[in-house]
Image (cartoon, rainbow, N blue to C red):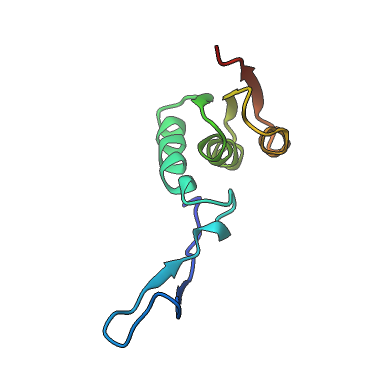
Length: 106
């Protein structure tokens, strides 16, 4: 399993005496979002099928999750992002060892 178990916290501002609102802290996942759950599953399935590389088009979070999962599984990753993706996000993806391709929009 690539994702981690994240805690729930009670939100006092949204909760009432008759309704409790809980927040799931998915920002604590290794990739910083819930996307690691789904992308991790896809990358795990690819690895089980003998694939050596995954390709993911993404604006950011899904690409980072794919890159983190691929690195953990020993897969290569190519993440295709639009030129509107912030440089900081591109750098985080690159830091995992993934190839980043920037595609111009229009």
